[in-house]
Image (cartoon, rainbow, N blue to C red; front, side, top):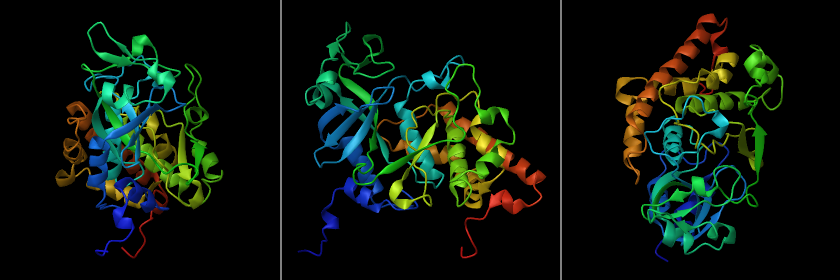
Length: 366
């Protein structure tokens, strides 16, 4: 042996799985990340099948090194904004939002979104010709313009009218590294206390009760530990990217309640840059608490050398499908960050005890 351990021979996706712990999906300075993102973008695809469940079409792709990724195809151009008359629950899922969300989560120092890379996929060679999914295979056709199209089977937007077409067979999409199989690492799904009503006219309880947070604070698992503060972190992430679709979140069962929240399914972020949906910040505004570490990070990202839009622009420039976000979305991030800091400022101004607003999760040892 040339000094190599068995671990050294593992593919990047397996090293990623092994590295997941109670606190994060991957470490802050992860030497694996460039390889993992490169594999997602370029490794040979040997199988493509449709992922069951969910409202919109997604594929599970398997690579030649046995790694797997969730492929979300491009549905709309980067410059399209979600119309103001659209309900949040009928919005398209955007592939570029999945890519940008991963990088934003990393810049915020959360590391709770699995790695995502953009990829140009050949519909003929990398989906149609290699799929074993008969239901999916039946939905391929050639459009009048001579492009290869397919639509799959799902409850929304899976029809000839909403088909995904290549140019002529090239299709953009996001490739998200799959988490370990649920048989190996069970996950628990939690309904968010600030879930929306998913109804055209009904309002959720939190939208009507300004003291809603005191009720949440008395309810397990939010009555102890850092779960509520983790949820507020997630609300900050969602507000920055304009994601109104956070109805559930997941945790790894093995780690119990004292663990991080997985920020999965971010395709409905970055749909609009001209409006800021303040209701997404309700957990922060109603509870008036935030981790000190998160607050200090946000303050740093509002300063000139570390401006949030600049850092994200730089991170996204390295993606294979760059540019990922239209410029107005990057500008909106700085504006929204200002609104998050202002909300914390209002909480501090009215707080009898500032340590209840900025909750010290850092400790004296730093």
